[in-house]
Length: 322
Image (tube, rainbow, N blue to C red; front, side, top):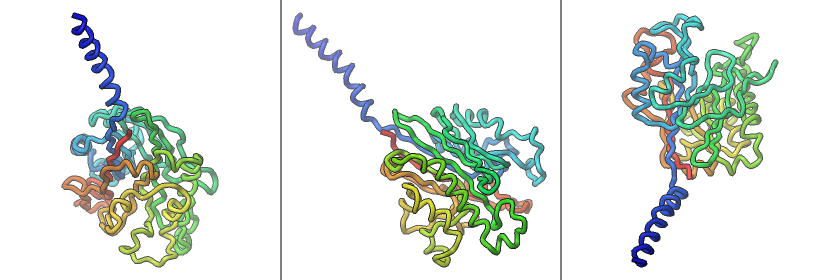
């Protein structure tokens, strides 16, 4: 009997200890999906976003970052939608719940083009960034949020820089274009965003940070494809990131010998996911996703610059939180 009791006691101890030991060291896989969904997924307004939801469900992301996350135009048209009739951004909670995300948040913005984060984990915003009057405005805004996963903090910076060849609020657009005003303005936005996010943390390079969005700027790491002059102002945005932050370009690091376009024209990569080296070392896969749903197709009605489902491609990044 005594032997029996000792055996049962040892078995009970093993049952208690084994799960704790495994749980402590078990990596938690995380999938992040970033996408500029063009005008609040305008293409999804005609089917109650069913195709969009099915796509997201099929990817099963843990975190989503959406650029251009507000409804702007009436369905199948380029007629401006009244603000009181817009489904997004107000109802992102309802839409996100359909693909399994109970949490959502919106960064700082001053116009029709905000970024939204949805997640399986609670989201906390550290900063909502719109810039400063009169000369340092972040046109489409930016945000810095954190998500806690497996006892670790993941910092997420979302952004969407000014898209035009002329500067924001330029009095003479033709003159501004000639002076590379748009490139210079984007570079100012990029510096401001970095200085108010990753630049505020001295040891950010040792932490888990991601920065993603529609940068509307080319990187010189892709210049084997572009063939621009070395001093081209289109490189200013990414030159700043590479020289002044601990962030690395995930797609280029993963595919150093390839050019991977992120827009329907197939001749530009302007959507990026950056991360710090400790997070990059946790990445198991990453790619720009071209598939039968995401591949951009010009709107058959000929609406100017409208594509279906978007003029941009999504980026998927898988990594482990351990």
